[in-house]
Length: 257
Image 1 (cartoon, rainbow, N blue to C red):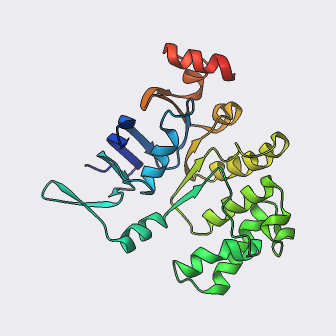
Image 2: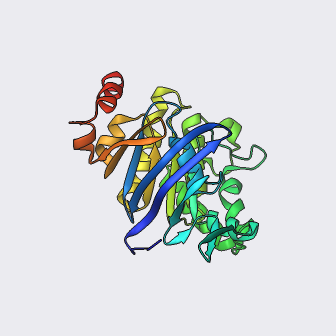
């Protein structure tokens, strides 16, 4: 697999099966450094599975994925792939931030402790430096006043903003978002999308699985429509959302736009 420096993610002929169920069927995608890519498609089309493969939370059945030139989860030797040791996988995973539908915050820790936990525990960074970064991130997501609160006292939108800050505390090179607003009440969606728009404006490379068409139109560099485990159509927001070529894309968008 050749690596060009401007590519952050390269997926080559990626297949994923769970038993006899083929979820991904030969995905080829490239994400440039600093690019925001949104993945659209009906439930079950393989979007979330693809994100999990990028972070090696699931393993590919065939094909390969590279992040910043490094194979995800494997090393190649004499043409064969060998899975990395757990500590090497953990190190690689620490460079990729992931935000899920559910916030997954530690309920027994304060907001500040949640954000500081991984940089101290995983990367062994000095507490003072991590706290300074955590305070800065809290200000960035507009929640400095909640530093000593516990997750249970926060709204869903506030918890998701904390989850984004927690992922950013690891200083990742890539951020993955798996339908980050789908569990939120409608009036709370905007505050999370605003944080994501701000993040995109800083040049963070982002792959976002979402049903928020306004976000895709406004923020994405590339929109990818998936269905049935394949990429049906990909292009600029204007092309895919405004003038889709494929019938499957047209049918999907007619229901959601």
